[in-house]
Length: 321
Length: 228
Image (cartoon, rainbow over all chains, first blue to last red):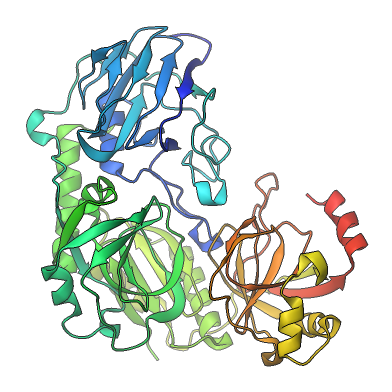
């Protein structure tokens, strides 16, 4: 273990690379967005493989990854989307702890599947802790590196690695547990708080029609193209809390799926809410991808929440710092 | 009237206290939030108050919607409405019009007022902070005198300067940071609503009172130098 913090140099930033942890909780009442990893499951798997605590920050890579130079030897894991990572020309395995030798370059290439990859490092990325989180929220300029995505010549400090023995080269998520990011996934939703503002068949329309993610899609939310969802009372409501997963439908009847960077409150009717267990599938969608919805009950959603968490803990138990 | 409790997700419940924006409804919301915070119920995370509802986020590994609904119903008395703490009144200086308030002439013209009088009218009432939202520290304040109530722009501005004071219908608000925005901008304050370098990063809290005091450009410049 080095007394000096290890540094990762950003040679090229990639399309949109941000520092993210599991989000900034506790300040939504002051207008602060939660933000955090779009795919919290993939980030958590990376951290647990490395023996990091779940709260450690990593990099979220979008479609095209960065080029990074490692000053010192570091253990890393790459999870989520497969963006063809290589180290000095050698292909790197996904969902696996790998040692990057001092002075070597990490690059990304073709997108094979998914949209967002996570680069986690032993010790985590050491951005300042602001309001309890290191997550970057670009719209409010908060967190990460000066509240912005990475740019060329940035230097990323890495925290002290977990104590020896927790992190071992080659540790990997079992093949059978690795998610397949399908071309057109089925996302499960529960009826939303304003379901009664819509016509009776609106949920049925949602559940039986294909949708497509438009180019107006980012970390705040995805505008979806597909069958319109008709209202029977006004589409505007008095602003109230919204969260990642809320399916808002403004007066144009076209749904917007809110994602990690959404504001904490909003004034559009919410027909449905994406279940937490399927948020990773949603996070791995990109512009042009298709999807469909299935409506389940809130009780089923709670059970899926618990079983998916239990499954993750079984595969990779959390570290107790 | 018992509030209505609806699931927002498998990890959040929204408690609805009424259908409109009224002082009484908002007081009930804030009183309920204080009670729920105080109770420190197992598995409950943050509570988010808005105009007429409170959303309670929880950890489904530690509690469930049915248990939590019962606990909330038991905690919140039917006649809840007492203010939970003495309201803090904030004096906020505003440079109305000029470069600070590009929409003040339009707002004044629709009200058949001079821009100066429109600014004075905006500053003539005490506002309540109903909620914060949109961006860190952005307050939704009510109630704007109906004569100068103006709807949102059909297309939002790409950039509204930090400190800008805007009107949307009978709501008024202050943009803490430079951001896109659709409200009619009538002035600007040098006061920082959100600053991580302060012990208390957020100036305003729901339930607080705000009074605007008109200042001129020179005073704005002077105050901007001294702000923290």
